[in-house]
Image 1 (cartoon, helix red, strand yellow):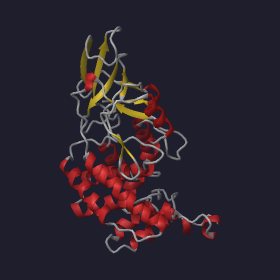
Image 2 (cartoon, rainbow, N blue to C red):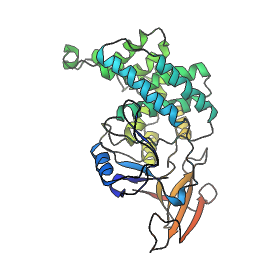
Image 3 (spheres, one colour):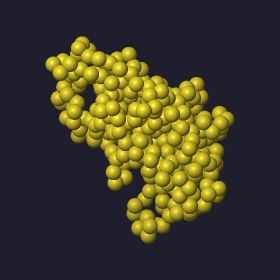
Image 4 (tube, helix red, strand yellow):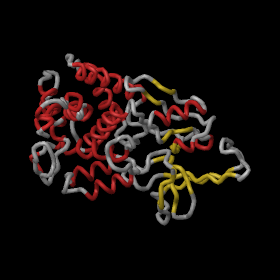
Length: 353
């Protein structure tokens, strides 16, 4: 599999990762052959990047921290819970707990796997993919920090529901028009979760604190340093990172994962806790599997594997095709796999679209 810009996708290309709706249903299944109509529709849905199959990468299996079934189940349960919030109904969190149990259990089993955030975002599912990504990143960080299972579940629940307050914001309320923090989604999310006896108060503080910065410049309370719970510090980084790499977020520009990591490193001890930044960088794939890279040798290749502990030095497959061969043919080619953890004189010089 490789990731390509949707503008470069051609009819006949085969989708490598399924695309979900906001209800956790499958919009397009992995393995479907894309048509002109499908590609146009995906553009209208706001899709910018797609994972497509490549015959020369067929045996490369992308390792996932959690299974596709768990991801779909989490989106479906999150959607059901948030719809209750939107309509003013009682939010049944049993589905959330079920999904979080699976996420934590699978993350513990796959603790050696670097996290690749490969879900395809659309204008319909963007909010749910964002919540799931933040949850997965936070849980992986929690495992790396040595939290026990109970702590991981508290962290995971708060991370999955960190933006739940956005659905309770009343734009007609005097507090909103006066730009009062009382109607900010952080406070609203906290008040919503703290009333749920099935959730811990620690989980409820994650929505409240995920916009607090360690230098005191954050919101809603301007907390400083250790006044912020460690879970809040973790989710602050994960939330910011996922917004930076999402073309559908409110950030001014969309960054590649390695660029977003550089930005986060620059904000250590300003917005983000330095220790947490280090653990975040150990958890995430700077160059996700399937990314096309340009190397210092002048060659162009695709990331096919990760090196745990060296996220900036993945394994890259360089493919030299015969100029006359179709890009869908596996004949007339030369393949070379370069492990950048061993080839110390070879460097990544750019990311290709």
